[in-house]
Figure 1 (cartoon, rainbow, N blue to C red):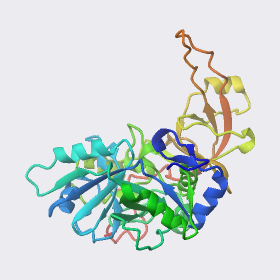
Figure 2 (cartoon, rainbow, N blue to C red):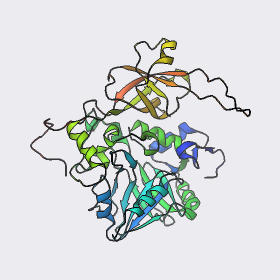
Figure 3 (cartoon, rainbow, N blue to C red):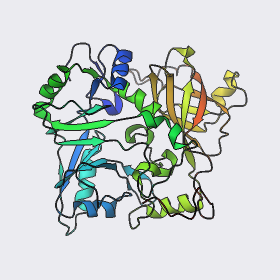
Figure 4 (cartoon, rainbow, N blue to C red):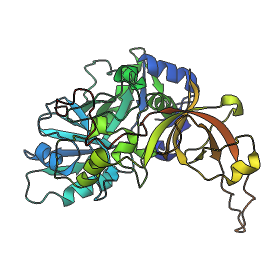
Length: 390
């Protein structure tokens, strides 16, 4: 949105504001439930028709056939090897299923769904150009001028039907228990009026940096940052909210079942507490190292990476934090190091500047996905006489 003091976001959030002049104040207001985030670059795809929910169930990892009007969920569309291709939020209003996804994924999602229609009674539309999304940590205040097309409430970290936690801690201790996230879809032509109305109720705008810090602190994976070309749901603890383990017959299901029942995910998501003495943040994509000697800079420069930073932010209380995907066999007690290597900048004559020296950040890991997650066949867990959650 065009506001004085707005600093443009880059990467997946380009087209919105990173902050409006005071990221820390904005983050506190967002956490307190008195700020909203412009997510108007996000994509919105609708699916209507009487077969829409049963059809989406057959295509996806999730069971949404019985999704009641107003109920929220999320689903995954996988490739044949079980790797994540799409991860839209979904809410149904009784006539239309509303899918919300990342800015650069809407067209591809709509095209793929269109290719899978066959003779079913469904209609797909990419509504991104005429609808805008707003984010908040509590529902926007009711107002006669607010006419949302859809409202979605993030199910994270609740265990859905047919789900299972891959986390290393008890559910009551999961930091996501304090996480609330709401998406409100409004007509794009009414976006400015809606924001002005909400601001008149004492709310303020917060940038994407504020939203990212709260998301990372809640261990909440995001498609645009934490999902790469190899990611499978188990690595990110998405079995808890986006997969129904008792349903079958969808693309990628064989991998989901095989890893869950017989194997372990090859990588696992971790939360990193970063050393704040550098006064900077590493870039997403930085290497994660597990060195024997973290003080030897020459050795660190040659150290083989055991993972990659996927999301990073500065939290108003916790300081520099990050999410990272690391190899499953990395010692959970190991002190990690993040290595940020900037690429040389191209010059007008085609030459490159010498690459700057890497920056190193000490990183204490906190387990999100436990190393022994998976391999459930033959393993009694809890009340093993009871079947999967339904």
